[in-house]
Image (tube, one colour):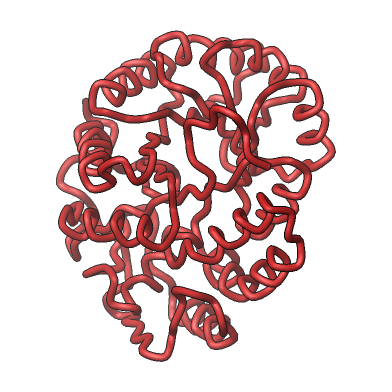
Length: 325
């Protein structure tokens, strides 16, 4: 399921933004984590997306994440900037600045909270795509934004020369097939549990949260699908199921991913910024029970897992709020 001219990669990590205990970005930990996921098999990194806590990052932090990503990746992986804004004018300026900072592509989320009509969604995406020469991924996630990008709107957007792909978190596989049949758009799975089903109908890759923990099995799945080895892809998919459930089911993926990464000793703190908070005792217990079922997953060895529920408790108030610009 390779796509000629794919400028994004196939195994993309929706990167968490490691933070210190007081909620400031931990830049050394960011550098280490980016290197870790690339070494594990990622060929694309989405910084400042939902998983990266884009809503509470400042614009300077978002731009520095692009710069750090470019520096650490050193050509080994594409750096895609996500997030954007539900204000079109702000999104345009942010993506222009991201292009100057070195981003290889941009991922534009449907304007959230505003609940625009399809005409408003169309105009938002077109104006942002007009403002940059970078390749664009549309992010269709109605569960967070309140509105879907409807099929007819996707077909119209596919005519824009910069709009090359969709990250699908809607889970309508029949619609994905229709769009793939009628356009040249690439699709990226935006649902960790449905990566293999998406790939099996023609998706080009994934943008995953669980890949923060280990990108290696996703590399295995993608490579197996590329060579037509369904058995190998299915085996990796099955082995990932309890890890995906632990990360994606009980608390927001950002929260669980940081909790797990900290327990593995791979980031210095599990802190998230408010209104996100760390898992409560009962949530942490369920996550840990799910992790106990994980076995045989490359890059996910929990034999020395040492979770710290106290360190994860609560959430941080940063010194400068994210919308300041």
